[in-house]
Image 1 (cartoon, rainbow, N blue to C red):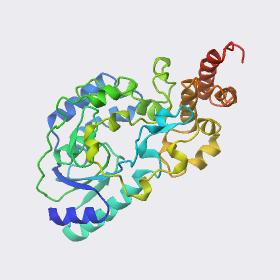
Image 2: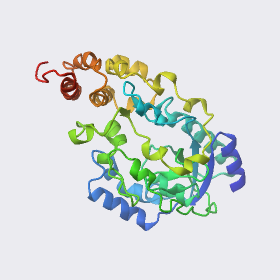
Image 3: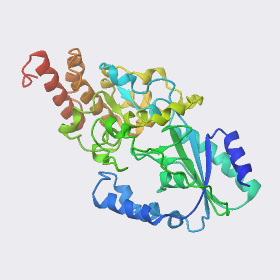
Image 4: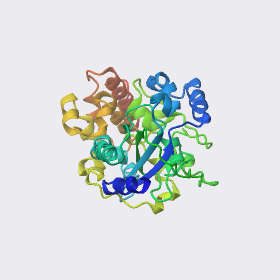
Length: 350
C-alpha cells in the first residue's frame, strides 16, 4: 500500500512522499507553549487560539491513525537574492512570484485523496497550510527532511525549497524512519538573516522576521527594523537561500511556480503607484493578495526610503503623502524624510 501511494503521489506531481503516525511527540506541545508564552507569535492570534489542535494531530482529528506527508519542489533556477542588489526594484519571495501554491498543491492533494479512498478505503482529510497542523515536525517524522536552524524543513534532495501538504487518514500505514539533523555546525542561515530573527538554536522570533513583518503584521513596522529590510517588500528568502544543502536542489519545472517576469524584479516606483483596484488586478491569483494593498504599499515605501541612491523616488513617495491609508501615509512621511536628508532638503518641508 505504501509503495502504491508513493507512486501515485509522484505521478500527480509531488516531489516527496513520507508516512508518519498521527501522534505527537510531547515536545511539540511544550515548544509551542513556550513560543506562545514568550509572545513570539506577535499578531498571529490564531496560533494561540488553535494551540491544542496544533500540538497533536489526534486532537485535530481523533480518528486519524496515519499522516501522508507530501513535498513539492519550488526551487528557483537562478540566484533568489539577485533582486536585493537592485535598489530600484522590489524583492518578492520566491514562493510568491507566480500563482498561489495553495491552489496548485490542493488540486493535486484532492486528486490523491480521491484515488486513495477508491483504492485503499478509509476516511481522510487533506491540508495545505489551511489548518492547525504541525507540518514541519510531521515532515521530519515522515523522513522528508529535518528542521534547520532557520526553523524550516531542509531536505538532502531539495534543500530548503519544499511546499508541504498532508493527508490525515484512518488507515493504519507503517511510518517511515524519521530524518536526523544534518546541519552540523553550519550557521549560514543564522548569519544571513538581515534582522537577527534567528537565535542559532532552531528558534525564531517572527516579530523580527521580514516575512512576518511584510505579510502578517497589521501594525506599522518598528522604525528600528525598517532600515534592515532593504528592498524586500514581500517575504524574505535570505535564510533559505543561504543553506548549503540547496546545491542539491533541482529547479522546479512546475509552470505555476515559475516566476512571472513582472514579479521577478518589479520597479518600486510602479508598485508604489498601486491603488486598491490596481493591487487586486496585478495580484489576482497571487499569494501577495494576503498582505493587502495597504500593507504592501507601505512595505514598498520603506524599500524606497532605504535606497538613498534613488532620489527620483521622491516624486513617487510624495504622491502617497495623502493616501487614504494611515499606514501608507506614515511610511510615506518616513521615506520622504530619509530621501530628503540625502537630497539636501529639509524633511519638514513637504
